[in-house]
Image (cartoon, rainbow, N blue to C red; front, side, top):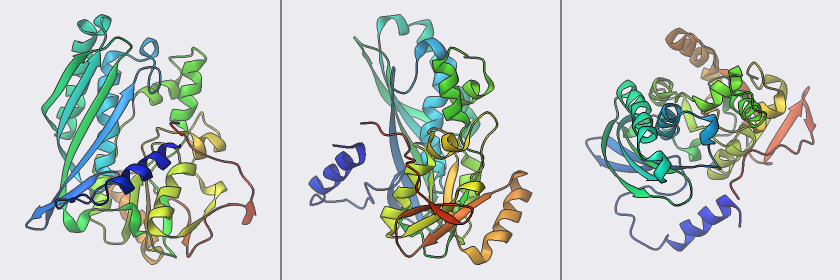
Length: 312
């Protein structure tokens, strides 16, 4: 069973239970409208030693920041402001002292920068490596919440940054080049919190998510949830310095925002974004009525076996 096949199985198995006001499985966060036009958003993410990080290649402080960043990215991807987190740690004996203190310093740095209170969690002993679980809570006006299911035929597809640096950095880490620029990027992702809030407030923005498993995989979640297709021009994918096109399309952990927007407003949206953030938005294609995901090379459909990261 694939990762998302397992998630679909869980969603079906629990579909007959009361939702208690929550919009659950299927987006970057669960959404709970609580009155007055406001909603709380909840997300959880795991980082496991040997799967998501190598302790010998990542400092404890870097990992503390990263553990929080990947969760804040999910909150930002739905147009919300992070307000609080819960943190649970399973630590072996050799990580329970100085390592743990340094980890918490990194976690505190991003908590302070992004205004997210640490309100609880749990700790336990591990016999086999470090496991980190973070639950992040966000808040947004209901009208600002962006869902994967909101893409419309004709929408322009954008990414809010260059792609591939993290994937290229992981290769450098495996090669032992820990100080390579892309390796530093891989260990130090920054969630696009301000950008997510700004895009959430824009009515011309429809569907949105963050790029954690790679464009080639993540765009399919929007297509599946929205019941649409897409045509992506590979020449327009923004490739980060030190990366190549395939890594930009397939490499994971870039944590840039991927979204669709009314094509009639696309130029104004991009101009306003540049004014607000001093950086471009990158249009890479269009949403279609159907037909799945089509890669275009020089305007012609190309048979590419591109896939992003899969956990199973």
